[in-house]
Image 1 (spheres, helix red, strand yellow):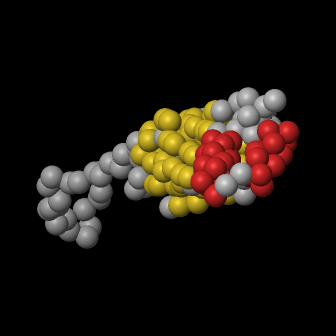
Image 2: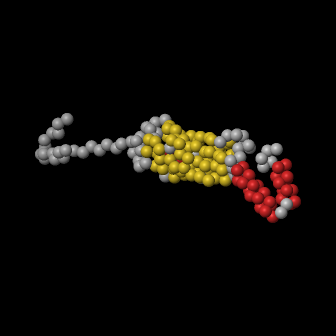
Image 3: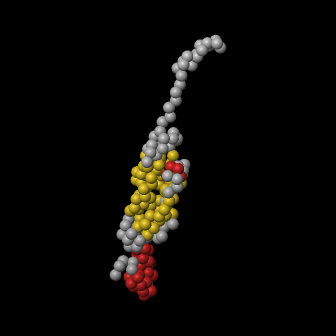
Length: 174
């Protein structure tokens, strides 16, 4: 029988009913350990998430979502993006969605495409937040990304800003 499966659990429960207090405590400890071992936990980490945005097209920023514990069933967890980066940095809409794990899968990558531009701006940050797992808990709910400004501003300054005065009747050379 599968560890923690219904038949094993029923057998242990019956054993608990039939035995003394010390055996009962030991059996409960074993069941709790089995339950903890089978628990599902999700967490997110920035994989490649601090980059220059580029001047055109898109740049991929990646985050890895991992689940641990019991992977014997399919599972999902939602994600959303917030921060000083806004929808225009992501092509018009702040990203969000659902990460789906198949049976046995433990890791998935979220790829967020940042739109390049030539606008001079400060570095912008964003946070990817996990929520609503279909099973289990979330131990690390957030991971940070930084869109580094790679655009430069140029200033033109006159080195000699004085011009000699001309008479009103003198023609201006063209």
